[in-house]
Image (tube, rainbow, N blue to C red; front, side, top):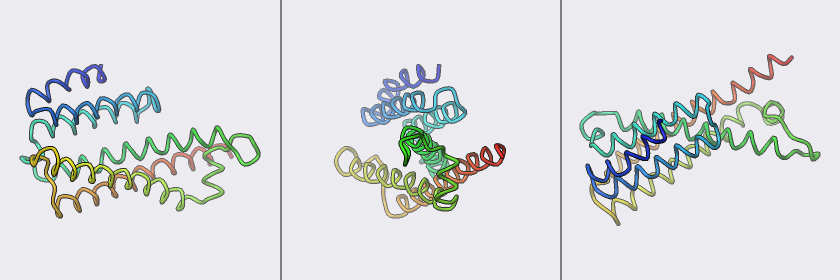
Length: 185
């Protein structure tokens, strides 16, 4: 139902706020399907779908301009979801390949690299994707419409929120692997 809602909101965003909003909602719809393919049925899938829909629709109806701090909260939350997806992709890649031809479990990777390195790696990947989003926002502001809000304070605030969301999600992902490993002992 949430993915169907995401599809229906694409033209609604266009009607409310123009084609750039429809394009952004189409990205949300794509993100909903990415969640389905990579984390289908999980808490990450359901939470991510709701957060993506809320973030996209809040933009379309101008809530970020009316509610102070909402942009930062949504950046942190959505970057947390994106970082969770990065963790899912890493886990899948580890299971497919190993040093000796066999799969490597996430617990083995955390034990080998250490939890701090694993958290830093996941957080760096999530934050890097936030940087890509900010570059896309800047491009959209300059090449598509000036209604896309950018500026030093906005970008720095967004990137800081992205970092908080990425680190939080990375800690949760690594801790969940660590707790599974502890339970197996």
